[in-house]
Length: 163
Image (cartoon, rainbow, N blue to C red; front, side):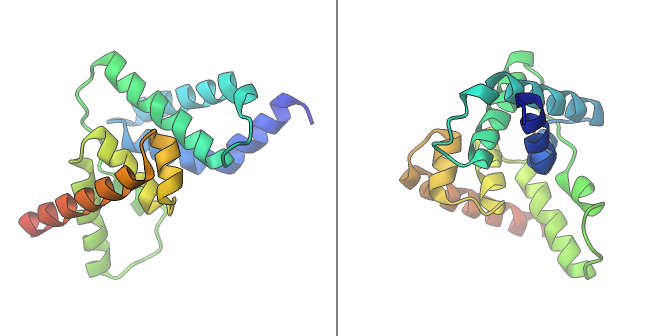
């Protein structure tokens, strides 16, 4: 299998990962599409450098998040994102109303976090280990634990205020 075929297979298998990052760091459908394409382009450019010292998804998250954050800083845009619950609703099964409201409230609170916190909590909610998050973000494992605890407290206090 040549490079192009391997890359296409990897992207198709992991497009949900790219979609989540693009959704978390954009404010319009057009921006999301542009960021999605930019992430795929950056993954293509660095595909040969993936040396399998980490999981493929860890490497992809790192490239995707670095691309998203770089694009935000480079364009100096104000970050006004579409609440992620609007995107997740189309993928979710019918939930009871109270559970749906709690999820909506959680994602509204996540949108208020800064870029780094948003990235960490996204990875945490994806089930990534502290070690994987540390590799992706570029901080120590113990720092990840501390940041997750602080983010949880911040989200908890925001949710209490919103109720």
